[in-house]
Length: 150
Image 1 (cartoon, rainbow, N blue to C red):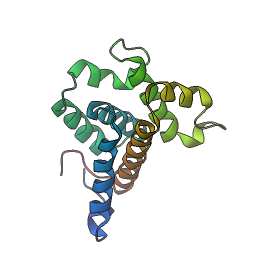
Image 2: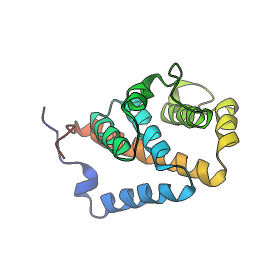
Image 3: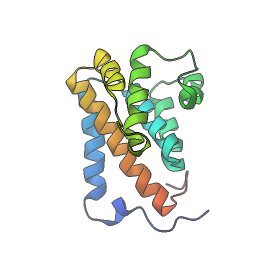
Image 4: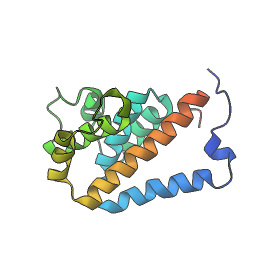
């Protein structure tokens, strides 16, 4: 496999710095780092971004995630490894990533479940992480970035 081009965020001056600053800011909302890694991983799985699935799995593992939980993220609804708060965050990640899949992309049911577990600052961190992940996913998928080639 060969990438079509270098990641645009590396080519446009200050773009990578801005995206990385956004990712760093996500950590300031009180959401555990492992939870942010899990929503990153789930969004990346949905978008088929092998680079982010690879890097996200490694980052989550470094942050203390178990192999069982990482293997089960794609099937989190059926797996016994996740708390209600984690399930709410993963559902939010799926809804925000799949905006065009339904008329009401983020229904009240999903929003309210997340809001039961996270305050506005926590929700903000989750939404920013999901959004930043989707930016990276789109850049990597469009350029056919190769996992492990960083």
